[in-house]
Length: 194
Image (cartoon, rainbow, N blue to C red; front, side, top):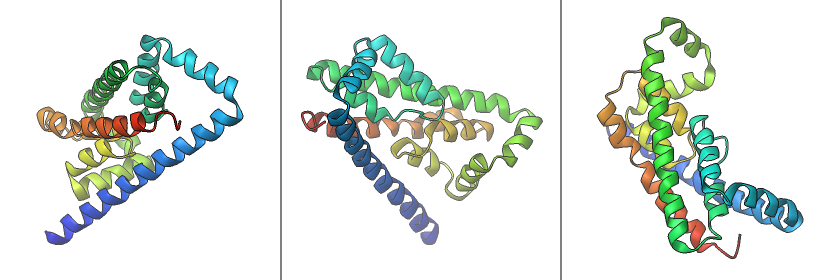
């Protein structure tokens, strides 16, 4: 049991470190892109962040489809606004992310009942990889995906296909709030740098 716990903590800490490295790389890339292509960057940023409805819609699509765009990018785009608008945007993004995860979980519940889908999934290496992690770490995988760059949407769908209890899924998925709060504070405190 102690070995299994150590394995889990190693897996969690590795992914957490990857998450912070990923955030630093993203910030570095944005700084380089912004200084090299200022007018293009400003055009993209304003096109998305000037309308919160559009931004949240794009974010919902991104979160539903395995996080195509990182949440931190949307936080960076919102960081030009006053603190209360920024805090509201990050809170809304958190709720949108949780909702997208729950939608994927519900889709997974339905797909888990379909034999053809489960046969297809078993052939897909990426899904299979997370299924093996799920067997290894159980509900801990939900927590790791909620807090780190692991694909939260994919893990949520996998959780649904395994008919995992919804209340327990929602409880562990709520760790996503911590990620958004911590990253939101980091991005806000880097305002002026990025």
